[in-house]
Every structure is written in structure tokens, then in C-alpha cells.
Length: 92
Image 1 (cartoon, rainbow, N blue to C red):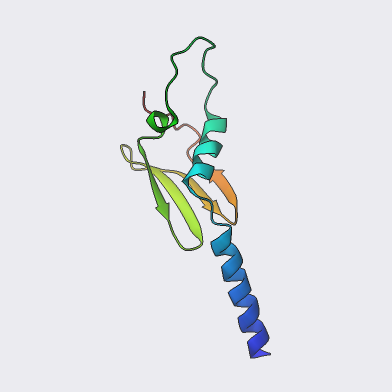
Image 2 (image 1 turned 180 degrees about the horizontal axis):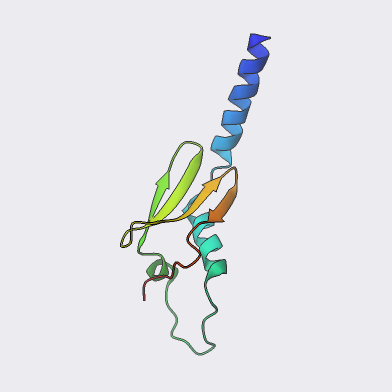
């Protein structure tokens, strides 16, 4: 019985580790939240929008925070990314 419980716990930990969202998943979730750009706007790189973000990767979860305001912007867990700071805007 103890081996079965240990096997289930190890399987759950392995699943959470494998499905931990990376920085690209956080950037794509934040990009969906941003307002659309005008049709004839200057093209800007993806990295300039997210240059203020600091990505922290933990064993089973990941977070992004704004380095200027020191607020958490999003967190990811089990393959999903949740936006916390819905008022966050990228640097110009």
C-alpha cells in the first residue's frame, strides 16, 4: 500500500514537472490580453514588449513579475497560465 501511494505521488510530481509552462507560454497568454495594434503601426519585436518581465521557474510552477513595479503579472501551473495583473501594459 505504501508503495502504491509513493508511486502515485511520484507520478503526480512528474506530471506537474513535465507540464510546467515556460516563458513562451506566459508571453503568449499576455499577448492575448494586450489591445490590438493599429494596422499601420511600426513593427516591434516580441522581446521589446516583454523586456520588463522577470521569469521565475520553480519545480512545479512558474511566475512572471514586472521588474519596475515589482508586481506578479502571471503564474503557471499544470500547463495553464493565469494572468493576475490584468492592468499590466508592456514597456513602450
